[in-house]
Image 1 (cartoon, helix red, strand yellow):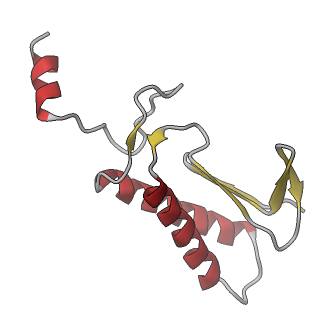
Image 2 (spheres, rainbow, N blue to C red):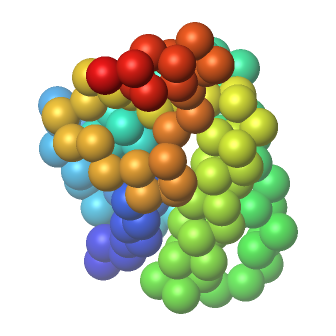
Length: 119
């Protein structure tokens, strides 16, 4: 049975990816970070999300894998992504298909503020 947790920026499935399809598989968790490409990522920031995911999964070791537990992990990861944004480790992709700013308004530099104010 496929279990899942989907937040705006974090999707977790009990499945593996084969030819771009999700194949339900017990004991396997697949993490999709920022599926809508809302953020600009560097490798360090993305790897920190994967490490945090592994920490959260390990914290549930020995417990039954439930949709509730996956949702908690997904929610905690969503908060972690928010912290990366507020720390400036990632930024909004201003060329994204949808500009939602769901984690707060984007920061703009001082020069950009002056340009925006002079229009």
